[in-house]
Amino acid sequence: MIDAVGEAQRALLVRFAAPEARAGFEALFTIEREVLTSAARHLDHSVAHARLEFWADELRLTANGSPRHPATRTLLAQSLYFGHSPPDLQALCEVAELALARAAYTRREELDVPLAAWTRALFRSLVLFELACAARTEGCDPHALRGPAEAFATRAGPVVRELELLARVISHAHDGNVYVVLADPGESHELWQRAPLAEHCRRVLEDRVTELRAQLRAVAAAADSGLRTAIGSAYAWCALADQRARHTLDASPREYVDARFDPLRRTIAAWRAAVACRRGRIPAALMEPA
Image 1: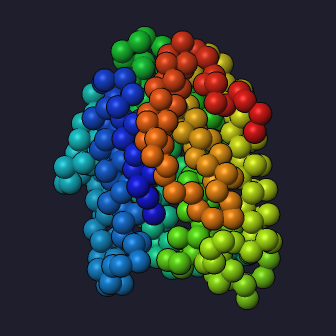
Image 2: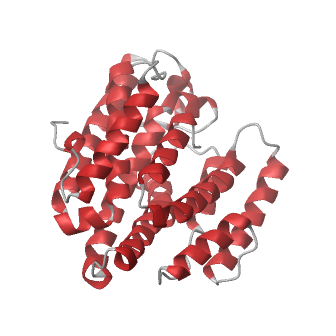
C-alpha cells in the first residue's frame, strides 16, 4: 500500500520538517506503514485479520490516551507536549480493510471512501500536529488557523493519496485492487493488469491525473502565507505528489520506474518546497501549469 517511492517521500518530509516535528512525523508514518501492511498480498488472510485486529485495538487505545506500541506512545507523547489532543488514526484500519477486500469501484462515491478515510486519519493528523508544533515554536495562532488548516487537509489529502495510488495502478491491480472507477464491474481487474495499458485505460489514467494536478494547484493557491508557513511539510507533500504525477504521465501507458537521479530530484523538490513555505510562498512546482 506504501511503495518504495512513497516511503522515500515520507522520509524526506521527516528530514525537512521542523526539528521539533520530526519524531511525531516518523511515528505517524510508522503507524501508517504497519497498519496498511496488513493488506499486503503476501500475507495469509488470517494473519492479515489478526494484524488489523491488533491495530484497531491499539489505535482505539491511542485515541483514548493509553497506547502500548512504541510508535503510538511516541506520537501521543509528542502530541501532548505540543498541546494537541491524542490523534485518532482509527480510519487507517478502514483503509486496510477495504484494500484487503480487493473490491472494485464502480461509482466515484465508492472510491472516495478509502481516500477520505486515509485523509481523516493520516493527512489531517499530520496537518494538525504540524500546526500545533508551529503554535508552540513559532507563536502562530492555532485557533485562527485551525479552520483553514482543516479545509486544506480535507481538500488536499484525497488528491495526494489518489495520485500515490494511480502511480502504481498496474501493480495494485495485480494485487487485486483497482483505484479507478470502472464503467463495468465485468472489466474489473484484468484490463488494468496489462502493461502497457490499453488505449482506453491510458486515457482514463492520464485524464484523471491531469484533473488531480489541477485540483492540487487550486488548493495550494487558496491558502494564505500564514498557513503555508505553519504547515509547510503538508505543502511539501503536495509538491512531491505533483512531481510523481508528472512521472506517471511521462511513463504512461506503463508504470514509471525510478531513473538514476530521481532520488536526488525528489530531495531537491522537497527541500525547495520546504524553503518556499517557510517564507510564506507557494512551492514553485504547484504554480506551474498542470
